[in-house]
Length: 422
Ligand code: AMP
Ligand code: GLY
Image 1 (tube, rainbow, N blue to C red):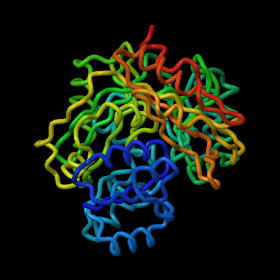
Image 2: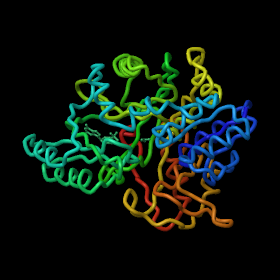
Image 3: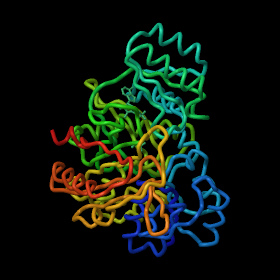
């Protein structure tokens, strides 16, 4: 079967690497891909939002399955377009993708379905939002309601921080069209966990647990990013909690969508905080997480194409996935300045040495080829991922490998997995 994967991040390199291992994949195309994906498939120079070109390519090549990695094309309806063509697609419709693309839609659905989540209010008027935070003195979390690449969240301990965040988002439109509305939430506390599930309308298959690290600096300090590192599984969550989350969160959310005649197929990702009052939802994503996918794909032993086809064809109940019991951990190397503005075009050295280490895989994100060199081309440049007999070993391996790699302005957190190692 010919497969087209849409995207060019670390997540897509990990998905491409795993899909290429399937004996049933005859050709793998990645649009637009990156230097990492070109090692396991054929990159096609089509952007993730160039739907007409994607459609033409799918027809010309008789693609059997389209896998959509990132949220932007999902939110803009690429899955619907592929569906209308009669091509199998892995990824939810535009309507279902609102769970991620509109945080207020997600909040209202959760409220309706009594799904545990932070209390929240929504505002599009800056003045009203300011009045609200002045009256509700105390910590809160302010989020751009639309898609902001993980950067649209500000933790506000003081009213002054909240006023600044409101100004930045609603008045200065810091996140473009994602800035039209904000959600102001109560601040929760507890360990965090990402739970990703394959969903095929009726069936839910929860994957192994993972934990992301969102703030840019060690000790969970500094601004929010798309993710600085992840590992799987995480000891912060027990099997009993996973069952509870499936029953009290995933099932009611899918029921809530179904009530509005919205079907979900693809990956439903719940970002959770494990509070003393039980697990609560921080956010939903309608796709694989980046960087959670990197350790998850290192651990997945089963054929990824088979499970994606099962999702696309609505027979997920027949699937049983095998996971490597060994943990995996991924450290993200970023460009100087990320999540703010950053330079690109910095030559990267040491990639081959790092990738050749046992049980290590270097996944490319923001990289590109420049002659015979690989150079930086984004904020999150690489995710260096390793398996180990325990988290400590996976972590040591990932850090030994990342130490082989250099580029000007390279930054990475030194404490990925700290909660698990402790
Ligand atoms: P989100 O993109 O909504 O998952 O938010 C990014 C990060 O902000 C999360 O991983 C949490 O660390 C933090 N966060 C989001 N919402 C809350 C909340 N209500 N209380 C405390 N922290 C939060
Ligand atoms: N790792 C967080 C995300 O993919 O949104």
